[in-house]
Length: 254
Image (tube, rainbow, N blue to C red; front, side, top):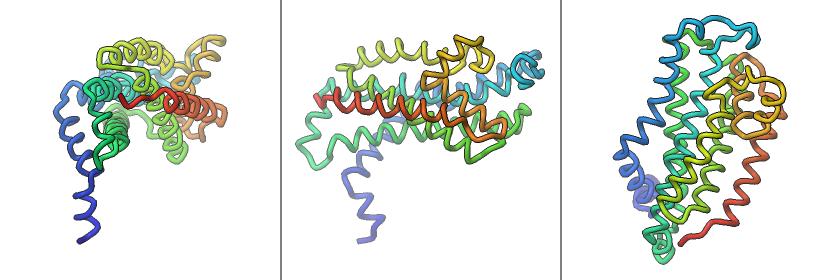
């Protein structure tokens, strides 16, 4: 039996394939994760002042700043709004508990959900960059290794938040409610309503101490050509570590 055939017959592969089919049947989630961030960038490009350099933003354009913001928005849509209700629903229906008595460990289902939502975010990020650079005149990241480091750091932080929401949500409704409560403040700290780089002193200091605020700074640093500030990366990974530990301690299968 070939390695490929064996993998396809493994329980983990079966779970991933099933979850992919279910995920593909969620047009709402796919729209908000894959398409909406790029549409937001295109809408902003239609506003003439946003296409002009702003001295208050260090000479950058508002449109340029919304490239990392759009990427972070895709992460929040996937990790905070889309994934927790799905996993909370599995817990509510007893699926996670029943899987513990089968050869398919419920951890495989959790990993499949994280992997699928994270993959959707990466596709969305690529689409944002492609449309921004090729159609809207946004400069490509000036420091690609730094951009990838910042992207992975932001992705880890976002899904750590989603993991904590999943851990405390006993059912789908709670998952949706808690996700919504967390989502809007995180949108603000990501710079969706006002770019982090344009925030005044004390407010900016507070925002960059949050995972999405620091991630926005890190992504923008790489966009303009420098490696992300180590302090911003430390903030994102520090939050990630704390949230993952809390998620593991609070998580219940049933």
